Image (tube, rainbow, N blue to C red; front, side):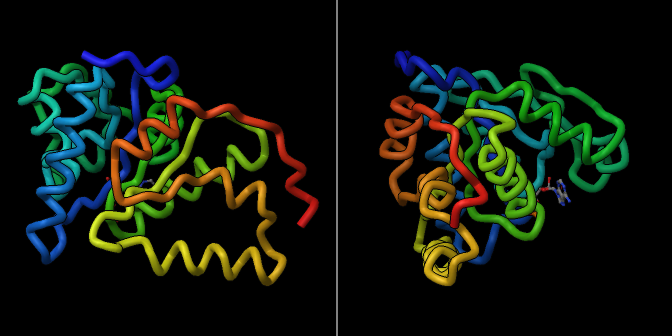
Length: 195
Ligand code: AMP
């Protein structure tokens, strides 16, 4: 088991679908296994479906701890995973996101859809406003997030996002690189209003 000093539990946001390319599931499974090997617990949305279920299964299979947080109304759609270390059933989406944030020391998004981006952007904007000091990242497997990364640079170039805020998000295709960056993370409060 590894010894990352900062991130003991990582919140993983990812699709409730698996995507067309089976490689996405392979990437999600590799991340789950890597987190278990490094002794980092997984916090996620608590479902069995899509890449969410794949990350959870892989981490559990490799001996890791997995905590799910699922709202009551999604128990059926996302089919709550009943083999987890811990499953929190909460009232709604807001409580889900707040609970996942409270239980985690960092946030990483794998490929996903609108829900994944919404969750990632929320914790990023919270960091931007100084509401937490935890690292935030995108795992750019298969180039999935490369156009989003370009768009973030465009937001910066156009004066809607300052460089310090842009730099709060680590984007890399290699999960080891992201986890190493997270372990070194130190948060410097930024002046969000200076673009
Ligand atoms: P998706 O990326 O759309 O497949 O969704 C991934 C996860 O995000 C699923 O667990 C969804 O339930 C969740 N999700 C979708 N919309 C939201 C939202 N507005 N706030 C929080 N979670 C959401």
